[in-house]
Image (tube, rainbow, N blue to C red):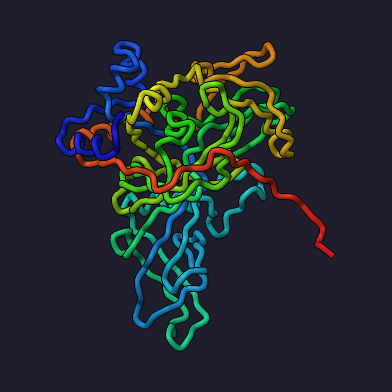
Length: 396
């Protein structure tokens, strides 16, 4: 019914009709699917929450004399130097040198790679310390200096796995408190935690990957980036509802964007007690309304999205695959769920409020003509499953 070119023409002319994934639900109820598909050009989706599989590539430029960095730390956080001479990769979950981790359980994990990334985007001055074995072309063996993000040639966020399509609800069946990447879980199912924006979340509004794919333009913490690959652990072939909505993790996205264009409020380091460090990110993705079917899928409601409840004291760490129950996001957002007759208090690691803010910011950019849509170069696979790591004996 519409093409990307036609929608972008309307964006450029300032005539595009853009609604958020929250607004479109009532709009279609009032107008009807066919009429709304004619009128609406774009639906904006968004999420904000911890995304551990994130990081960035940094280029420092060359010192005088030059150095081939073989070991390096930023604010005492180790960076990966197995690249070219002054390129490094900083992972969000990397701990600060000397952090006692869980030696005195539960550890606090006050500062790590994610906090360095937050400080970089915020424009703070950071310390670099680097070592080298020295070569004829790179003779310097050690350097200590201070820099900001503006001193770098490139600071490119390069995230292998963001925007999980759906995710677990974590509970604890054991008799003791446990500390996980899903937060602190009290014993005997006293609480439950989840992490998703539900009906606002990008891949839940495009469950069959009809518009979001490799090359799709995204809003990553305020910068204009794109999907560069399917995300790690992408498993599009999982179980789904009759409407195509996955009932477990399913799809993921690998995202990249220029950190120099990011907004600090959407890049935040997270300390997870007893577990480690993560990076909370804001992501917005526009969905072009190409036809009625695409529009219908953006009308998904929290009550239509099921999430698996998983015990993180045994079933998750032992990788049994057992699911205690399924609950919907309307129940989760109410603050309480009922599992096997017991009422359980629910908390969220993601922020629906921030996700809605992002969806509106992206919608405003599109209405102003500042953000154009891009057609995927390739679509995400729909039939893949996630393979386990199998402990095997060395082949004879």
